[in-house]
Image (tube, rainbow over all chains, first blue to last red):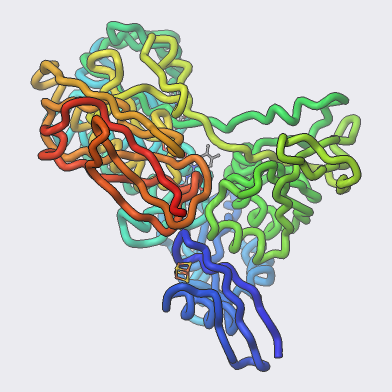
Length: 116
Length: 418
Ligand SMILES: Cc1cc2nc3c(=O)[nH]c(=O)nc-3n(C[C@H](O)[C@H](O)[C@H](O)COP(=O)(O)OP(=O)(O)OC[C@H]3O[C@@H](n4cnc5c(N)ncnc54)[C@H](O)[C@@H]3O)c2cc1C
Ligand code: SF4
C-alpha cells in the first residue's frame, strides 16, 4: 500500500487529497469535496499528463515559442525537452505551424508565435 | 502620422489593442496606438506558457497566441500603430508627447486618451541588504525575457524569492532548460500565486516552497555565489537559528506587480492608494474628462481575459465621449469595507445606463465567508463563498435597477463565518 498526497487544481478550493494505492490500482480517495476532485486524483496517480511549452531557435538566431498540441506524459517532459532543443526552424513561421509531427504518439509540437 | 486624432491609446499590449479595436467598432475610426516595443502584444509576447484565454476563447492559449488574436483585429481595421515609440508625457488638455527614431520628439493632440501602459514588477526592499551588489540578481520577468525572447539562460543554480506567479512559472521554465532551482522562499504564510502553478511548477519538479521565509544574506563579489534564507516571526523579523544556506549563481525575485502610472501621475489624474492605478467611474473615465484607463495600468489583473473585457468597455466609453461629449453625472462612491483590499470602479455614475461589474480583492485567505454590499446600513447583495483569497480577483454584478435606487455610497465587506 502506498499513500500519495495531492492538491486538486480544478478549482480555487485547492482541496488536499490523499490517495491510497495498491500497486497501480486506486484503493481509496479522501479529501476531495466534489467529483471533479475524484477524477483529477485518479488521473494524477495513474498517468499525469501536461502540455509542454518551450521555445525553439531559428536559423537566424531568433526564438519562437512552441507547445505540444495535446498533453504529453509528465514523465517524458525532460526527454522531449532534449529533442526540442535540437530542433532549428527557418523563418517564416506562423502560429499553428507543425514544428515536429508525432513528438509523442499522435501529439505534435506546434508554433505559438510568428516569425516573419 | 497626423497632428491630431480622436483617440490616442498609450501602450499596445492586450489592453491597448482591445480598447482601440472597440473604439473603432463603436464608431470612432481615427485612432492612434503608441507602443514602446518593436511589436504590439505587451508582456504576453514573453509569456510562452499556456493557460491564457480559458474564459474568453474556451481554449488554453500561450501568451503570444492570445496577443496575436487582438493584433490581427487591429490590423484588419487598419488602426494606425507606431511601435518603438515611447510616450514621455501627457498634458491635462490631452497633448501627448512621444519620441521615436523617425520623428524625434513630437506631440499629437487627442480628444480622448486611453492609458494602457500595463504594470511593472515591484522591486524588493529586502534585497537592499548590506553588502556588495553582485551580478546574477534578476526580476523573474527579466529572466523570462532573457530565456524566452533572447534565448539566453541567465544561470544554472537558482533560488527564487517571492512566490508570485511569474516566479513560479520561471521555476518550471528554468528547470526544463536544465537549471537546478533549489528553493522558493515566501515571506507571507501563503503564496500569492495560483494553486495550479504551485502544483505544476513546483510540486511537479520537487522544488520546495518555504513559507514565512525571507532572504537574510546574499553572498558573492562579482557574481552571486550563495544566499541564506531564514524563517520570520509574526512581525516578519528573521528568527536566529533557522538559517538555510544555498550555493547558487542566480537569484530571481517575484514579489508582485504594480500598475505603471508615471504618465498618469504627471498629468494630474487622481490615483488610488489601494490599486496604485487611477480612480475611475464604471466607464473607466478618470478624474480628467476624456482620459480613460484600463488593463494592468488600472488594476493588476490575474487573467488577461478580464483585461480584454475591461478594455473593450473602455474603448466603447472613449468612443461615446468623442461622439457625444460629456454628460452631467450623479456620482456615488464605492468603498472597501472590512476585509476588502480594494473595489473598482471607485465611483459610480447613477445617470449612466447598464449594469456595473465590481472587481475586488479580499485582504486575506478566508473559507466559508459572506460578501456583502451595503448602502446606508441596508444590505443590497449577499453572497456566500466557500473560499476567497487575495490572489484571485473577485467580481460582483450590480444591476442597473439597483443602482438607480441607491441613495448614498455603497460599501463592500467580507464577514467571516463563526
Ligand atoms: C513579467 C510579467 C509576466 C506576466 N505573466 C503573466 C502570466 O503568465 N499570465 C497572466 O495572465 N498574466 C501575466 N502577467 C500579467 C499581464 O501583464 C496581463 O495579463 C496583461 O498582459 C496586461 O495587459 P496590458 O495591456 O494591461 O499590459 P502589458 O501587456 O504590460 O502592455 C502594456 C504595453 O504598454 C507599453 N508601454 C508602457 N509604457 C509606455 C510608454 N510610456 N510609451 C509607449 N508604450 C508604453 C508597453 O511596452 C507594453 O507593450 C504578467 C506580467 C508581467 C509584468
Ligand atoms: S475537489 Fe472539487 S472542490 Fe476540491 S479543489 Fe477539487 S474541484 Fe475544487
